[in-house]
Amino acid sequence: MTPIAIIQGTPTWVWVLLAFLLYRGIKATQASTTPLSKLAIIPLVFAGMGISHLISSPLAGWAAVAAWILALGVGFMGGVFNASRNRFIVDPIARTVMLPGSMLPLLLIAATFIAKFWLGFELATVTDLSSLATYVVIDAAVSGVVAGMFAGRFFTYWKTMHALRASWA
Image (cartoon, rainbow, N blue to C red; front, side, top):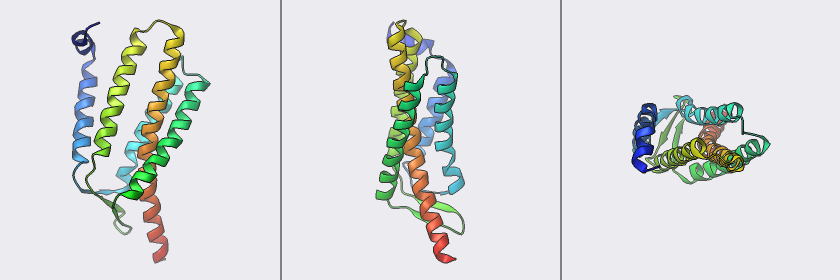
């Protein structure tokens, strides 16, 4: 199958999703102040999509679930590490976080989209059952690490905000 055929065979909603994700990723390269509650949306969406895929895929067995959980933990630690190294300011009264611009969300979004696009193609075209099972495990790991990265970042902001609120009490 040629790359042009793959692109032409891709549903329109995938390209709309890519445009939206790129918009969000590019927007994240600029400093911004965001409510903490809004920062919880991305990790919840990525975790929900990963769990949904594990539940709905007939090939997602215990290996895929284990890969997702392990990757979630690794991603979470990476997200905490990354957020802890960046300068951010929390306002516990307004419950907002001032974030510096970062390329990381854009890179995560792009890497996730590329990996999911490739895995979607493989899952749609590969007929060997053992290869399909391997791709499902890889897909679960990609979903888990990305959800974990965003969750780890959110946790760092949340923990900092609650530590400040507690120190004022």
